[in-house]
Length: 255
Image (cartoon, rainbow, N blue to C red; front, side, top):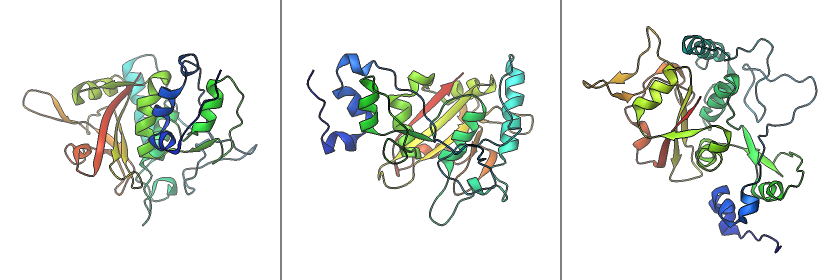
């Protein structure tokens, strides 16, 4: 078999282009989930400045309910525990140079038992994995952090392998969340060097509701986010993902 050649142009376009250049047999290969390796015994806390590691505090809440009402209650508990708007939770607090929407949504998904990567394989590692090679996760050599722009591409290219599916309407997105599922809105910036945005679409509560039109269709789902403004529940700016800053956007659901 001829060795695979990746030009700088292919690499710049991202993993989706790499998959198209892989032979069919390799493209069907299993690309495993990955997280940032940690030192034995180390704990990553909400109170610490964010890095590439996922949370692993004792007593973290989980989502494992069998009924929709149980799952919704568990997601509500996860949102409260993450406390994205608490100043003591430095992990999510914006700075003059950065916001942390990607990390917050990663944490929300992780506690709910859904994979959304904090780090992901670099293109060369994907090539090797697709050929069946063992690849050691090494930061900035075989794996790297995922920003919102990266997560847009990851959900498009790899999300279906991990249970994510796109949906076309806000009503379906909110309905899935109200059944205790995971919903996401993600938008990619035109300038890839600037921050995109990603939010969780979360179950409605007695005091926090999505916005609907007179026909009952959702026009602004109930969202939870870190960003320039952090909030546990809100509907945000109407259709924020259509702003001229963004090149593309999508809605995703996970059971």
